[in-house]
Each structure stands twice: as C-alpha cells, then as structure tokens.
Image (cartoon, rainbow, N blue to C red):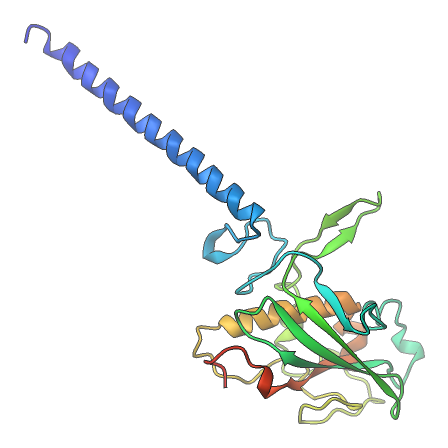
Length: 242
C-alpha cells in the first residue's frame, strides 16, 4: 500500500466512531431503563435501592402514603400522637403506644400494624393501619409538598438501642414484650436469627423509622412512650423467619 499511515488512521477513526456510537446507545438505553424503573416504582440504584435518599435501604418499597389507616378507616390518634408532647409536665408519661405487627416480612412493602394506645394505666384503645416503606412527604416553609430525606439511618441508634435512650423514674419497664401499659425494657431492638442475610432487619428498621416519624416520636423526650409489643406468628410472610 502506498500510504499505510493513511489506512491506519482510517481504521482508528472507524473504531472510535463505533465505540462512540456504542457508548451513546448504551447511555440512551440506560436512561430509558432508569426512566422506566422510576415510572414503574422500581428501585434503580445500587444494591436494589433508589439513589435519591428519600426511600429507605429496606428490601422492598412502594409508592403512596406511608401511613394507611385500616380501622378506623379515617385514622384516629396514632398519626401525630406525640407532636407537641411535653414530657416534663406529664410525669406518668401517657399516652403510650405498643406496636404489634399482624402481617410482616422482608419482601412485604407494607406491614399491617395494630397500635395499642394507652391514655392511662387502665384505659386504652386500638387502631389498625398499614405502615409502608416509601417516601415520606413533608411541607416546607413555602407550603410546597416535597419528599424528605429517609430517616432510617439517622434513627438507627434509637432502633438498635439495648434499652431506652431516656429513662424516667415514674415509668416501670418490664423484661418481656407486652402490649402494655408498661413498656418493654428493650423497645425496638429484636433478637432474631439473621440467616436471611439481614433482609428482614433492614425492612424492619425502615418500617419502625416510619412509625416514629408518623407518630412524632422522639426518643430523647419520649423514651418509654412507644415500643414493639410483638409479632403475630400467623402473619409471618417469610418462610425463613421463625
């Protein structure tokens, strides 16, 4: 060939064009995949979770409200029950809430929950609702509705605490899980096998974090006011969880 360097440059040019076209196609297809995932409500980030930080690192999530009343259907007192609570003026610490999970599982985006709400040492009511692992909505100072950052990681210290973060001499805690009126000594931390790679615990923490936000629970001032009363064995949706 008379001009071998020209042919070489031509080959390199064709290779570069092919690679550019392939990258562009891959990027466009990736964009379509991400868009389709968002439209269908499917996670698109690494580790099977979204990348925007609004939905928790739990194992599965859903769209729609995080708190979904079942009975009564209009909701009652659980939502916002601790907002405005003044612990110093309420030495007996009521209301108190024990959460019992009626249906649950690592692959369940919504957990059916029964709240036993104590208004005194002898009086209580019950509410049933679904707690769902999804984006939490909030209104900013301009009145705009937006998604708030996921609270699971920031509440991990409270969820995994071996005892209440705050104690009060007027409240008697008990060693076993109970629906009340006395709180369990270990409020949210669970003693379960982790032979599922921790999937159940990741979803559990996400659900509990949302219960705290929905109710307005703040462990610093309201330590003994909410706890997990137990799990209904018949509601276990995971075969690997005993």
